[in-house]
Amino acid sequence: MVMPKGPQAFPRSEYLRRLSAVKAEMERREVAALVVTTPANITYLSGYTSKSGYVPQALVVFASDEEPTFVTRRMDAPAAVHQMFVDRSRVIGYPEALIANPERDGYDAIIDLVLDKGLGQKGIGLEVKFLAAATTEKFRSRAAKATIVDFTNVVTWIRGVKSDLEIAVMRESAAIADAGMLRATEVIRPGVREADAAAEIIATLVRGAKGKPGTDLSSFFLCASPRASTCHIRWTEDVFRQGSQINLEFGGVRHGYVSALMRTMSIGKPSDRLRRLHEGEVAGLEAALAVAKPGATCGDVAVAFNATLKKHDFEKESRCGYAIGIDWTEPTASLKEGDSTILKPNMTFHLMLGNWIDEEFGYVISETFRVTESGSESFTKLPRVIFEL
View 1: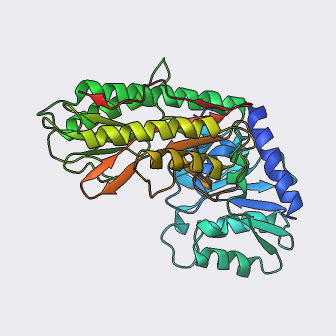
View 2 (view 1 turned 120 degrees about the horizontal axis):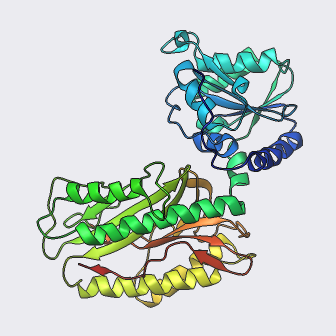
View 3 (view 1 turned 30 degrees about the vertical axis):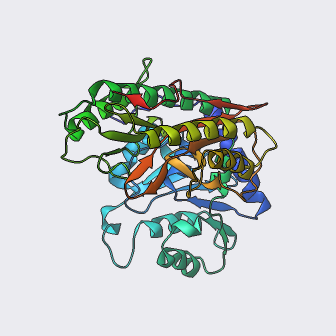
């Protein structure tokens, strides 16, 4: 029995639209074959979300072909046939002999594909920054007459402006994140283990919301007293206590797309210092969203937040956020002072206002938003409060 096609997250026309934008860049840069190795970019151009990037693999976009070709480990090929919009003939599984082989690996299979296509003297695009130096050198030596073109982050920048279909999926992800945060308010109590609360929250992120299940798990951080000043701890063997502060960061996931969310909770009355910081952060958040509109820059958004927070006698050392989409962070635009990236409709950002002030004091609040035609739309429906439990 052959592997059937699974339900597609987007119609074929959406993937072809994305590929058309990429091929336009390929033509401009004189690239005949683009070797896409970044998992998020593979997802964007094909619908593939299986976790097989632990070994060499690539989605190869040929300027002359309507559909790309995917080269992966043979055992992972059925997942690609199932998830990708491309014809099954476009999925190539290389043999196990290329695994843990000191002389030849999966990249040799990818290079073979490009050379067999007769493109050994053309431009070959690579996401160089995300490849090992030895891999880039392998392409240079085996395709010695080709011109290697650095395509790092080119596809990622194209991903920056979402289609309306993508925005709809990110709204679904946001509803899941909201459900997870509301579940947290129900299960976090004195005497409850952090691990048990995390399990309940994560279960909600998987079950989803409004009839749409979560399709993956993103980063999940639960930083509770006495670790409320940390930013990237998952959970511990400790229990919550009266007076505990809990900082939560996670996201809902639909078909690879993440909408992130952060909120601070307190078992009992928050300290005056925490309340004052919260008031300043919320004022800054609202100021930032008021500035976020087409024509403004990422730096303008950061300036609005930082200036407002400073009026409340606090400062935030880290950036105010970043572009978000597939697999959480898009390594392109940052909401920080000096970033001149111009905002466009349907760009999406995580306005990440976590503030870790010293070893004993930290706080989090954030929202994922999109730039609209005239302003911004926050995806979360939750109030901007410290949740008192």
